[in-house]
Structures are given as C-alpha cells and as structure tokens.
Image (cartoon, rainbow, N blue to C red; front, top):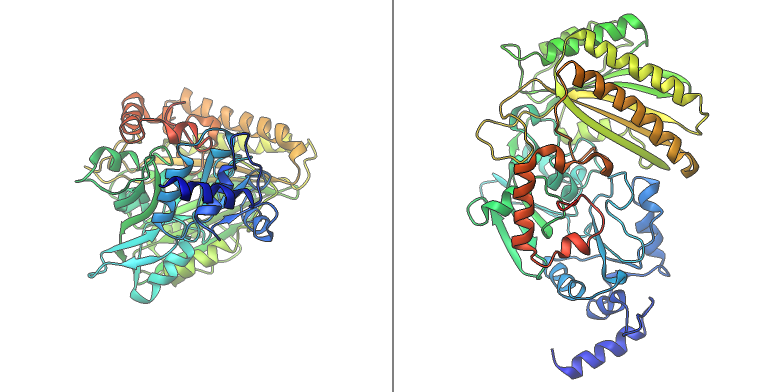
Length: 496
C-alpha cells in the first residue's frame, strides 16, 4: 500500500463517526473508509435494527463500537487483514450469524466490532444436487424453503431463525440426527478466512486437522463464510404436537415410554426424533410431546405408545421439512427479554429415574416461583441424543453408533435483568440436583452440547483431554498469533 493511499485513507477515516484512538482513527473508521456502506455506527438507524434482532436481551444490551456487515468472503478477508494487526479494545470483534445463542458475549461485543454475517446467506446446489453450499449468515428457515421444490433437505435447525454458522460450527441437533448424527457430521467442506486473511477451502482431504476441529470448534480458528453440506431426499416428514393434562399418572406414563423409546435394541427407529416438554408458565405446569418422523409415513407406529397416553387430541400431518419448521417455530417467541440455559446428557435409565428427575424439576420450579420473578417461564426438554454413525470422526467424546444417549435442556425466560442472579441460582440448583442423581446412579456422561450450553458449563473440557489437545493444536497451527483467542473475546475458547 503506498504512503499516499494510506494518508488519503486516514483523512477519509477521520471524517467518519466513531472514537479515534490517540494514534489515529478507530478501527471502525478505518474499516468504513476501506469498505463504504459496510459499516454501521451507533448514530445510524440500522444500528438499532441490527441490535434488536438478537434473540436474548443479554446480547441486545451489548453496544459494539460499530457493526461490520460483509457481503462477500473477500470483504471478510479484508476486514481480518485490517483488524487483525491493530491493537486496542476497539480492534476486538465478535462474529454473529442468527444471533440465537442466549449468553452475553456469544455473538456481540461491547466497544469493539460485531461482524454480522447475515448478508452472506445464499444456498447453491452443485450439479448433481448432492451438495448444498450455504452462506454462513443464512437462516435454516430460508435454506429449507429454497430446497423444498426439489424435495431435498439438509441437516439443520428445527426453528426458522436458527443461523447456519453458529449451528454448524457447534454441532447441531436435527430431525435426522438419529440416522445421520450431528449436523456438523454432514459438512463436507468449509470456506474459511484465517487470521492472516488467507481464504482456504477446508475438507477432510485438504486440511484434515482443521476440518475435524471445525466440527464443534466454533470461532476458534477463523471465520467460516461457506459450508458445503450433504443433501438428503425428503418427500415429507410427520409432525405432531400432542398436549397432555398435567397429572402424576401422565408423568408416570411419559417416564415409562421415554425409557422404552430410548432402550437400545430391535425397536430402534432412526427416523424417529422427539422431544418431551415439561414446561412452567403463569403458575402452572404443561406437558407436550413434539413427535417428528423423517420416514415419510403417516402415524408412525413408534409413537403409538405416546399418543395413547390420555391427551387433548392430535393434529399430526405429513409436511415438507420447511413447513414443519415454520409450524413448530410458531410456538417459540421471536425474542425474549432475558434467558438462561443449561444442558446435560446421560445414558437412558429406567422409568423410576426419569420420575425422580421430574420430581426434582417440580420441586425446584415451585421454589423458584415463590421468588415472584416477573414473566418467568421455564422449559424442561428431554430428547434423544444424536447417534453418531460408526466410523465418523468426532471430537465430542461420545461412543459412535450408540443409540441410548439422552439429552436434557432447561431454559428459563423472564422479564428483568434484576432477576438474573436469582434465576441462575435457581436453575443451577435444579440441574445440579438432577446431575447428582444421575451421577450417583451411574448414568451421567461428561458430554455437554455446545449449541444449548451456557458458557459456564465447560463445554470443551467435557469432550475429554485428548480432544481438547486436538482443538488447541489446530488453533496454534492456523492462528499462531492467537487472533481468535485474544481479539474474539466472546464464544467458547479452546484455551480456557
């Protein structure tokens, strides 16, 4: 770069909004001078629009110095080449896609730069339609609808607003996870901008260590701009949302059928994915089953024991995946003022253990409700864990081919930041009691699923020392200066 060009750039940057450092213009100003119309400052109306699009209030409350919205991989590369070498808090950055992760700092930043990937969002099929190239800033609702006319689908989120980038780099539980594993197991290639600004295409053949690390390693190695994922034929899937009266007998029946459903053996159906929701809102408990089946059949027999539990009626339909996602997603609010979430996994236990877990939940929620927390809603979800196909490389520390792993997830939504401490304490008390029960009975496993986890849960530690070592080795090799460890302050870090 010539000295004349650099001087012109400094003059142009000085006229832009933003706080200049003692040594010259801010990083936001420099980026805006290089790439006009890609940087949004707090004084711009689009800034508040972008901030308000995060799902949880914890993310919306953060205030970046500016928001960078690239449209191409080259623009991401130019950003990294500029921001990477600069020092100071204004050169730190966060990377966001769908903005659905709940905890503060996962995909936004105070004072630095938020790289908002949502304009890199296309879906492009290869010649034989076996691979879909997904822009990292896309949302799965749009991806599914683009593939719907072709009777194709991909392993993706189950709510329309879930972002491609965060979902696929954190694992990804999907409708097809009992047959094909986590969504990251379907990724054949990644387009990645490294800390140097170099753009590489990562496959198992070209960069096997980085390809493996990106299967759950989130933002530790670079900015992924494109995912090349396998497509799957789909003529439709069965979806039913069954609601039940909250009674002890119904809970007992659910516990019995959950244990039966998850028992390994000849009854395993790889097309069957379900979720049991034990929710609390407005002073009452609610029970629901979401029943999904990707085999293209109506009223799949595997769910008959659940639909025979006394309920308020069934409305099951055979629908395209895109329509299932829209229908199921309509049950979830578009945003929440505050939220807190934890997940844990275990080996399928007898029905009695499920009932003990449900009792801990009931008692804990009643104690939490006595705190008079404004707008409190708690969702307690039990669902099958993904089944990683045998022979599939993975860093999660899970036994491949195993069908009896179960995942539980507890999410609290509420109105006011003043209640953060009491909600976190109450939910942790419930979850720790449940995990203690499972541990004492020999069912708890270490694995924590990144997409649902809180930052406090030690996600990478739960995958095992050897797998953490592989993540760290990839970080040192492809980001030797630690740009994505030091400058990207949010997200899960492999050097914890």
